[in-house]
Length: 155
Image 1: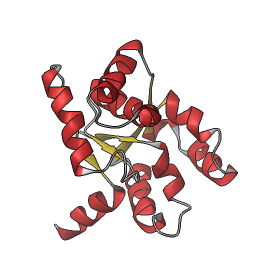
Image 2: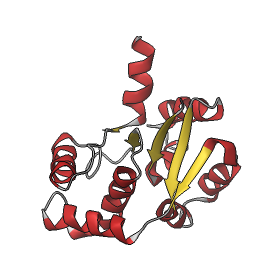
Image 3: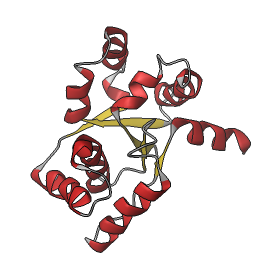
Image 4: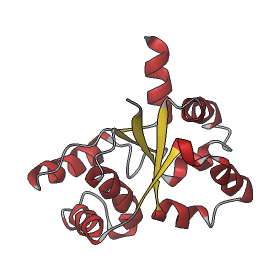
């Protein structure tokens, strides 16, 4: 069974960033090979509308067979606001929380991000997951593309 990885907006931009392009390209290679389903949300689409043209063109070039779109629902917003109310992150990180809540409620295998301050951060991940567990949701694995491609290369 193919794994469903939720990609936040930073992953798409990572393909065109000198620091992140190599690992991001390897991750998208797995998507193109059909090994991973690229899960994203209508929030991702909205954020990408403000991205550089080359990022938008790349996102649009992904075929429907390799991606899955999720919608931000009232339940997602409630969970996202719980993260903020519990002070896992501040109010300015609402969109990050929406990505995490969307991934959590749709039971993806993993959320992938290059955002080390608010998302791929061991203390934040513990906070998100403690709230998830308390509210009866599954824990969410959160990793950077680098962790994913480097871990696989070690096997």
